[in-house]
Length: 466
Image (cartoon, rainbow, N blue to C red; front, side, top):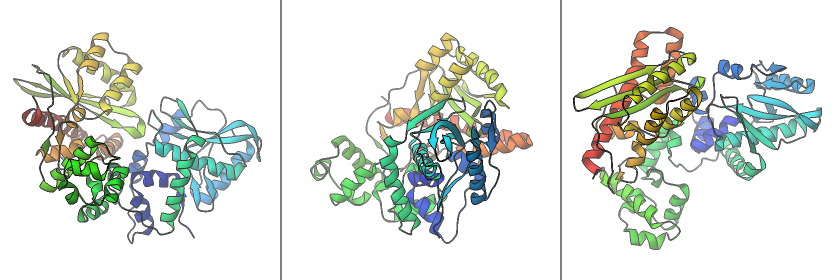
């Protein structure tokens, strides 16, 4: 009997094909913690999902845990013509789909003068590729169950916005991916290729060790599979071999790859082989009497951004400010206090690491309002340190997360298990227990993040600024 393929198999395959293989064929299964799995897939907690469905009439919830029993219950609800089916299960042989919502629409099918379309509830405000693969999977299962394939898939956001996408536009990629997954299920091990997505996998350490052992080109930071394929076709199969090549030589061997990319990859190979960073350019950062370093802690499982942390740095010293909401209904007050703080620091550059802080600021401004002077300050003063670093510095690292770069420059987080995912689990535990020590751990983690951002900015000023 074939192991089951589910919608999560597509997520795992896109992050790391070996995740699928090792989950199925490893001698010692390594199950993922349930909350962590939901977190990675942009899912929400059941209580948050039910909250989003409170305005729907005639909602039926599938409660059976066994897949076959749950499918029987789902099919019964579909035949009854229930308007919304929550936690439905669709089964065909070894395919098992778990759409968050099955929604009745008018049309003709085996069921009668209606049929069902599938939607997933996600924290995201945009539809990712893995969501579309999952939607194609649901559509194919629905066709087998009701005789009609939905034309569109859907994602519902925590704002109750329903984002549609056309199934047929993604179907060809879905079919190719499904074929590769079926081969893995049958026992074919995929070629290893380390990406940042592999970090999500419980098998990341094995994947990385294997790649390091063979000096694999996928260890280059942000390298594309097609670029690796072109290099390997040209006989450049390891990082060591790439480090020894001149750029003109690589241009001759790989004319399909741009000269800029070839130079960056070659320099990355040199950095990794020699264990040192390379300065490719200079970073311009504003001179300022006061500088702010900003980081946000969120609980994506509840679509709840609960902590805005700022390190204020002046010539007189450093001060950490935390703006905290213990419950979603306190978000507005937290935001109001943060905006007032920004209004008192109109000329200060605000450094953050990655795109997330800007996205939350824009969302909160739209949701809760913002003064014009604070809006202007945030628009003009927010600086993504990662964006500043990438063109200027090549690190001897495969990944450029704040934790990776912070460790490289010698920064240490106080908690040994510090990570964004763990901070979510800590917060979930705090919500249940309200332990002051646990809240202190969360605050210290956020403070360490902004201090790491500050330390990294200082490192860049010293090594790569004009």
